[in-house]
Length: 288
Image (cartoon, rainbow, N blue to C red; front, side, top):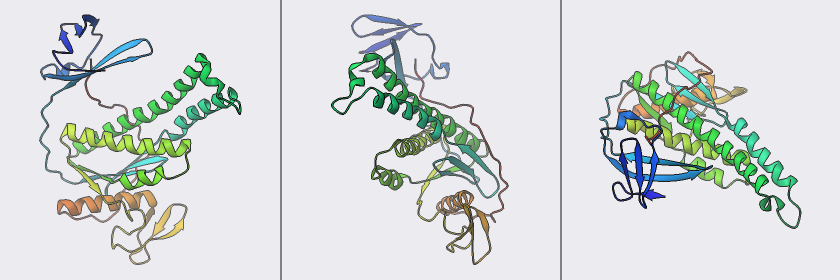
């Protein structure tokens, strides 16, 4: 339910007053936003509890002049973040989320027949199926928030711009594939990570560039020549001899395309590699 400030709800001390005379105790909120005016709020009832999400009007921070680019390459199994100097890899939770989708599917199959879906008429089984689906979705959402916070924090610390591929065409192509749990989760992960990266960049004043994805993992970032495969996910340029992992190539090309938008140039690709980076915090819109 959407509520308008002052007309639909009021916050007074440690209490929230809702339209209709209802009063609730505030159990916690982000104090950093106390001095900003309240806007619309969203009242959510879930699993026997009410949660009021209050939107704040916060001034948009000024963007700094970037000293370089932090490129983000999004894949099914891992996210690669880096540039021509350093690189980090973050594993995606697709497999973990997929397990919960499969548990829901097995319950549905167990309590169904060719004539009708019996599980829909059994409240306990229905709640369990919904729990598994919600768990899979929450795993993706939590990972996207944490990972986006890590990416933007790294960029802000180094005063770098963030560059990611335009995933619109990729997401649309995934929609056309046969319906499957993995495809749906991958599409959800792409969409949510892109959303939270953009949101965090806007919130923190980090410059953001969205670049054309075509050829980022198959074109040499040095000379633009078509790369040839020389091993599992390893590519080599037949012209200049550059050889690297497919994902590292994509990061360098994304960086190069973002630098071209900034009017800069790309350093010689000699990036050392950092692996198994685990994000530990994430930011989200403040709520009560």
